[in-house]
Amino acid sequence: MVEYRVGGSLAADDPTYIEREADHTLYTSLVKGELCYVLTSRQMGKSSLRLRTRQRLEAKGMGRCAAIDLSRMGSQQITPDQWYLGLAFDLQRKFRLSNGVDLPTWWQGLGPLPPVQKLSYWIETALLTTQPAQPLFIFLDEIDGVKGLSFSAGDFFGLVRFCYNQRAENPVYRRLNWAMFGVATPNDLVAAHQTPFNIGRAISLAGFTPDEAAPWQRGWRGWLSGPSRCWRQCSNGQGASPS
Image 1 (cartoon, rainbow, N blue to C red):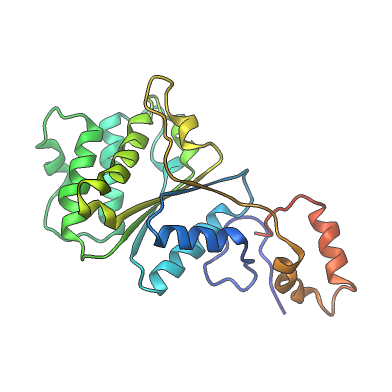
Image 2: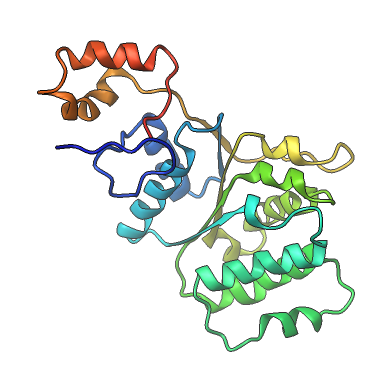
């Protein structure tokens, strides 16, 4: 008997997960080194897609992955320095860096440098130099969560753009790639006076086609007559994810 989950993300190995065109597009684009962002409304399967893509990249030995939920990185009370230090700490922990550096002490040692510059320096001198020579993928989930901050996150997206553009000058940056997931586009989260976020590939997360949904309908056999017809009635043209 097939058990279906209602609401929330599906595990990477969940048998009820339905692969869409976006699965193939996101995976192949990241492997090629393209910065990607997946934007759609909530409960459409973005987080499940992220989990599945991460598992596939790591299982095939394409590189190491770390995921950060920006909606959990603080609110109005957090300072820019705390926020950027939190990002560095999360990346250090999730990539399991073991360079013997006490991150808070190192961070404070940079003195009055802007927080975004500290994070940029940490990425280049710690993340990209202490990891084995393999690709690193950073997944940023719920990017519109930065709207709750008391300061603009435009500098952060500027840093992402900087890392991407640095590939032409510094080969070490070619190992680093980003994938962003959310409702708002990165450009929507950049202040009007800041440089537009005009890089990367936008990937749409469309609804399921009948062929894509066919494996999911197998669990209905023996319980419902005409699973395909029931699927069309349930989806009702909404294209929603069953997760």
